[in-house]
Image 1 (cartoon, each protein chain N blue to C red):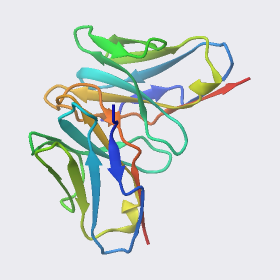
Image 2 (tube, each protein chain N blue to C red):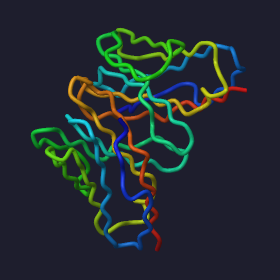
Image 3 (cartoon, rainbow over the protein chains, first blue to last red):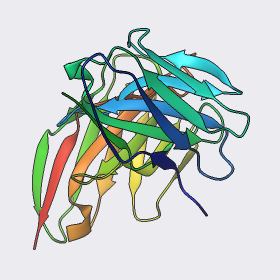
Image 4 (cartoon, each protein chain N blue to C red):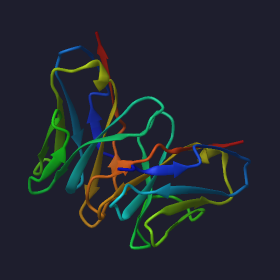
Length: 112
Length: 111
């Protein structure tokens, strides 16, 4: 049973650039949530996708956008990168909006 | 609002028990518990839903006081593998799966 997968594992970008992160949910799951985790802190909710629509959004600027595809996989896009965007980006999938979420291994983004 | 976890850190000897608490000021629909080891992703431990439904690992137990908006995670007969940072994530009504995580509790189990 394949778990949640994310790509790439690590990424280094320059301030001002744009980045796209990808996530494939666990088999049987239809909902994808994205989180940002800074070192030493808990994950911070960015947004959640279900039925290809953004259902919930956290306190993140419009530079953060996403998409969900018909096969339930998802992308997170960040434009105009800032140094403060450096973090571990986690994708989590669930079966529906309200139930337990399983996290992928994350993408470590470094902005220089 | 971010839930508050206590204690912030705890050190145990193998075989000892521990309780980690999570408290919210908002009316909650569910509480989720995760363990994260350094450099790894959070691992799902337990979900507790309003109304009493819960699901999780056999060796982990937890409670959810719906009146007080508090949850506790009980770790019994701790093993070295229990070491890590424990996070509670809370979801409010009408917020779907928007989990707000606490600041974490660092648990260290020594031989």
